[in-house]
Image (cartoon, rainbow, N blue to C red; front, side):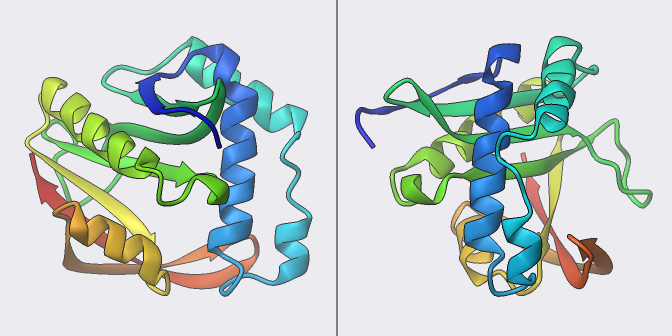
Length: 176
C-alpha cells in the first residue's frame, strides 16, 4: 500500500470501495467465527450492495456520517456513525459506531486509528455526549483496538446472526 492515509467524508463515488473493504475485512476478521464457505460466498463486487451504499451516501439521514480512509487513491477503510439504535439509551445524546472496517492489507497502517479519532470528533460535533458500539465477543483483535481507543464494555450482550452463524456480541461505551 503506497502513500499516506487520508481520512475524509465518504462520497457516493466511494460506494464500491467501501463494499470491497467491507467484504475483505469480514473475510479476514471473521474466519475463526463463520464457516469458510459463507465468507467465500461474499462478493466484493456485489452491485446491489454497491447501489445500496451509494443511496445511503447520496441521501444521508440526520446526524449520520460515513468516513473513508484513502491511501494511494484507494479506499482502505471506512466508519459509519449515527444516533444509537439501542432501546435502552437516549438516541438524542448517544451516538453509535455502526461499522469500522479496514482492509486486511491496511491493518497496522494507522487507518483504523485515524477513522476512530475522526468518527468520535464527528459524534461530538453532532451533539452526542456518549457513544456505543457492538462487537463480536470472540474478536480479540477488534476488542483490543477499541479498548486502546478508550472504549469499555458496559455489560450488555446479545445474540446475533453473522452470515447464518449465531454469535454473541457485546456492547462498548465511551464518553465523548
